[in-house]
Structure formats: structure tokens, C-alpha cells
Length: 148
Image (cartoon, rainbow, N blue to C red; front, side, top):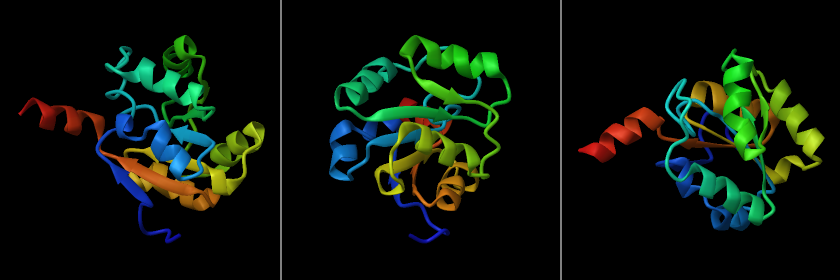
């Protein structure tokens, strides 16, 4: 597991299906919020988010949002309707909150993945925590590409 590279890349979070996660033996998915699950500071969920969260729950995969956003109300407000645990102002690439979330969930490192849109924060924090770091395309960039 090289600290200099992403372990897997996807176009969007929706491509990280329960089938993909089960094939990789993932039981806990730590996930960035802004530009990963939604555009930055958007209060509206993107189409398909609710179904994706439900599919993870049905598959028994735990989901925790680990965000660098400093606004507690924004992060909690986004997560509450989906009953998703969250950490705001995580200060990634520091890995302390990733490790803490993993320990609270009771899931070993080998069964945990961090998913985000930035290598310099999300993937690097995963590497520092000793877990896999998966990257998705920046949500706004992906959405603009799909409009073409």
C-alpha cells in the first residue's frame, strides 16, 4: 500500500456499490462529503444518494461521513435525514478522526476504506490511518462532464 497512490479510482460515489465493497471485504466506508457525495456546500442531496445509502445499509456496510467542513450544522444537517454518523472539521489529512471512527465502529483496518475526491486530504488521511484510500472524481467536474 503505497502512500503516494490511490488504491482505487471511480468516476462517482454511485460506482462504489455494495457489490464492489463486498468483493473488497469492506465493512466500513468512511466518506468525504463536499465534492464527493454532493457539490461543495450544497444542502440538496444529489439524485441517487438516498438509494445508495439504503443499499449500503441493506448490505450491512457501515457508512460514516468524515468532512473537513467546519460548519457542524451543515454536515449534521446533511447526514441526519439518512441517519449517517458524521465528523465535521476532521482536519484531514490528519488521520485521528478516521482512526477514531473505525474504532467506534469496531471494524479492523483491513475492512475499512476512505472514499473522497482529493488525494491531498482524503486519500492521504487514509494512508496515515493505515487503511485503503479510494478516490472519486470531483463532483462538480463530474457533473459538468456529464452535461456535455
